[in-house]
Structures are given as structure tokens and as C-alpha cells.
Length: 118
Image (cartoon, rainbow, N blue to C red):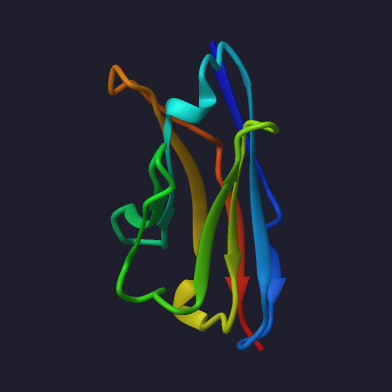
């Protein structure tokens, strides 16, 4: 079993910042070989990819968050992070952590709510 727990969400004003964390536990072997990603889902919308970081530390971002969000990983802590800056109301969503192993098995966290509002 693999468990992912996201934290760091909350309510923030437009222009503010938040840092999301994703802690993994359970049958996580060779975390450093896994690809990590953050997705989000806003009410009434499909889940979308926000950012991803591969095992080799290559990163990819949705156009809507480029220059504002930064994904990172700490293999020693088996954790992933998403630093979000210059937040906008349209960033409001539930954010999910995803990890994928070398056999293409995907694991998801329960999500953390991010709300951007004045």
C-alpha cells in the first residue's frame, strides 16, 4: 500500500503564496525513480495537470502557472512540494499529489483545498 498525504492548502488573498507538501509512506520503494506531479480540480471542471517533475528532475508546467508555481522533490524525505506564488482566483481548486512508479502505477492523495479570494 502507498499513502500520499497533501498539506499546506488554505485560503489566501490574490497575489499571495502557498506551499503545498505531499508526504508519501507505505510501500514506496526507490522513490527517486518515481515521477511526481500535482493536479488540480476546480468545481465543475476536469482534473488538470499543474506541474510534474521526473525522476531525473525535469519539470513541466501548465501554461497557466508557468513562472508562478515551482515543483520540487526531496527524495530523502520521499516528499513532493508545490510552491505557488502570485495566486489568482482561478487557481482555486482541490490540489492532488500524484506519484507514478516505473511500472506506470499511479497513486493519489486525498487532495487539499486551495482557495484564492479577497
